[in-house]
Amino acid sequence: MDKFVIEGGHRLSGKVAVAGSKNSLLALIPAVLLAPGIYRIHNAPNLRDVWTFSRLFGSMGVHAELNNNELFLDSTTITSFEAPYEHVKKMRASIYALGPLLARHGQAKISLPGGCAFGPRPVDLHLKGMERLGAVIELDGGYINAKAERLHGAKFNFDISSVGATVNMLLAASLAKGTTLLTNAAVEPEVTALARMLVKMGAKIDGIGTTTLEIEGVDDLKPVDETNIPDRIEAATLLIAAAMTRGKITMTNVNPYHMTNVLAKLEEVGCTIDVTGETIELEMNDAPQPAHITTTPYPGFPTDVQAQWTSLMCLANGTSRTTDTIYTTRFGYVPELVRMGASIDIVDNSAIVQGGKPLKAATVMSSDLRASACLVLAALVAEGKTDVLRIYHLDRGYEKLEHRLTALGANIKRVHTEEF
Image 1: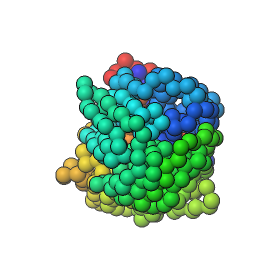
Image 2 (image 1 turned 90 degrees about the horizontal axis):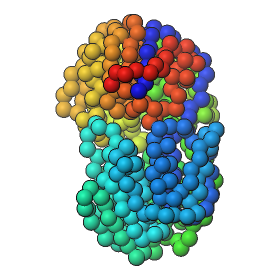
Image 3 (image 1 turned 90 degrees about the vertical axis):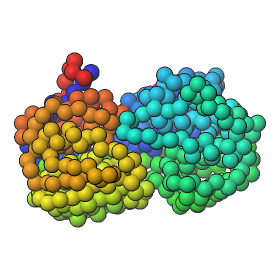
Image 4 (image 1 turned 45 degrees about the vertical axis):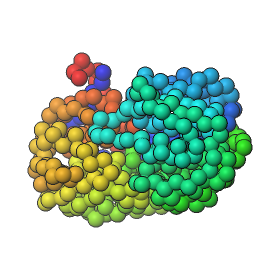
């Protein structure tokens, strides 16, 4: 097991390229189950979650290779319609296999999913949506058993905006007979990226990028090559890191339009930001001003950035509030920040931060992916050397983060440890 040893107090400066989006890639991969053949997805990040997903699909017969950030997938022969617990327990996105397996093969056996331990994220919408399309579903022994001779189009309204359920319904409806109308659909860039890939494959989808999607099912789709979008969460994390260290960085291979809310908040707290095409420049010379954020579905402030934002607010001279309306218990990182000297209280689904107190080095432990990033950012400005344990969480969603930070001037080392 590895940990990070981070010496705080080093200003970040320089140029860094953003990796491909983890969340987007995990939505694109299941599309290969809809049409047999060879796919190549460019700008694919080399991450633990990508390898976990590849092994899951490998168990179904899909051959996967990842080289130089190009993911090669061969779905010519599908040998199994099951997503077993040994793979699914490691990541919740495995539920994405349900829609395409039902749509093309008429059956699926999917283990109820696992993933980050920061609160329940039910799959009810996925199941209700598939039933609306004509699937017969039973839950037995921790598995979802689903069957359908052929899915048929239907109207379905998402009770809450759900990226995962929207992804699954898009995949399923693309081969369903007739027209499917999805309302209150998620509009996150990851959903739009999948919809555009499906259109390239031959799907007929109207309303891409809006909350109303109309899908006219087709009989067959074809394999394609696709380019993955940049990771807006990694981009936000690196920008916040630069702001915390009063640094100056130039970020390339980024889509600024995917993160307008984060950029606006960074300007609100005192950052100078210049956007040109696929490049963002950020400079920060003073302590940040306190600012409140509330996470909401895209295009609002992303829940995947709230932990990193709380780290930034620890440096602000004043009181700020971080409220999460999406995953209301996602504050497992707070006790670790308190160990480093932060003053934070949890009230309902908000973290109230009394900022301006210096952070000091400590041994801290990650509880989930974004909590890991939050603690790394705090360590960059803490007095002394901080040990961040359980960084296997971080490796799920950030490709060689220590290399990117080191190139910008951070003092961070990956060290093998027996500590847990």
